[in-house]
Image (tube, rainbow, N blue to C red):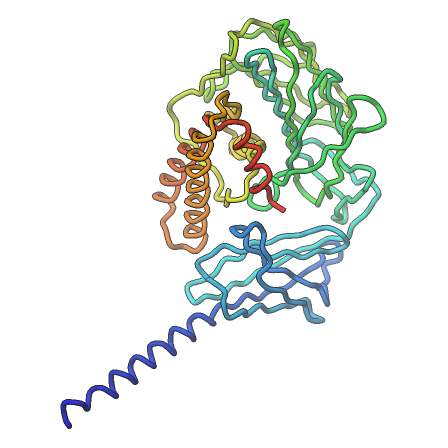
Length: 413
């Protein structure tokens, strides 16, 4: 009989271990407060959504604020090693805040919302950057505008008739647009045509502070010359034109030579203190070989901000990389991806799709580990840069069908 005495002790220990595991699984807790940044008062009865970016902004839980603006999430199946976002929709504008868990599985999150207004606040372009390079018979143009809403008291600008307005050359191809959202995640936006040919506007709410707007388009370059005439309806503190390759000629009364970009070898031109609706005009000319791409420059380490790329649309990848590098003062991306491959073989597409999918997921997993404090900063940056370099290299070889697929399946909702 003595031989059987340890068995119930072992069983009790196993039960205790399982019970502890179940308790730990339910320890996760998210709490905080929602404050109105316009009035400084707490926001009562505000619904909040807990979103998982890895799941395509999948909603995993909801909560509501009390009279004092405070809220609590405590779902039993919350994974404290994953990355989450809190979303509050206030007066038709979505506001987000990242959720970061501590070692005990708790997270304190403060969400700030603002009153909305349809009256245009003082808007300025703090920085504007036009990145141009010819390739074959096309001139590729990437415009990036850092728009500052300095309303006092702070309010979000909401207007269905347009919050951000710009003018593009009438010879430009169909433009695409995105804005940099939470953690610089690119959010595709519809660029609507205005009443005059070449005029466009965005309906994206401009929140207090800085909003980065990205616009991309192409122009025919068959005559080895093209004229830029981009303009915005706001004053510009500083504008920059970056042209690659450096052998191209730039004729402009507005932009002045500002040296060679140390990162790309491209030529930089600058202008300052421009009035609203000033045309960012320049004539670009010079011969470029058929299909000749702009070669990236080697050397130098580039840091990017941590962000999940799992749902990134393929056509917006270039904008995303550029805005991250621009925000760090790096200039035209050495990682500029060539997103227009010529081959369309189905087997190649399948292989590239599988490889790109694996790299997207690896980047997301790495970001989640970093956000949860599971990996040190130095190895995180090293591994992330390596993964992103492999991803860019894969997308360079992608046929158009694969990029269209990622635009459909990986665009943030």
